[in-house]
Amino acid sequence: MLQELDSQIAITTDTPMLTLTSAASDAVKNILSERNLEGYALRVYVAGGGCCGVNFGMALDNNFRDLDSTFEIDGVKVVVDEVSFEYLRGAKIDFVNDPERGAGFAVDSPNVKSHGHEHGESGCGCGGSCACQN
Image (cartoon, rainbow, N blue to C red; front, side, top):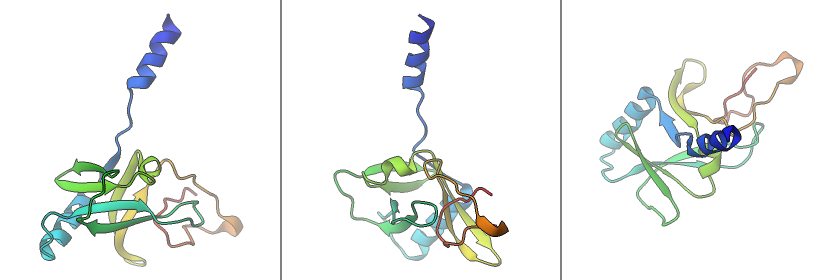
């Protein structure tokens, strides 16, 4: 009986699709406003592989497909295609302004395996949007 109850709890527990930090949602809202892009959404997608196994891309898009999943997060419409959906489940998108690397969005997804760096290197050498755990 206890095992049965545990499996029911696991089934009802759901990871949020995506989260946006306030910096990320503010950045998207500012870009949409500055460019007068009413009706556009932030599309987040898998953009190929890199040293982390997968890289993510982002675009402002108003061309939505039947198989897209759409979310409203902190006043920002976010769209994810069916291929990218599982890679992005539970991901956090942040806007970072790094003095050395510049400003941009970063995706931290629990579905992308972290990797170590050889020879004492730190940080990600691919320049991609992965979150490296050293």
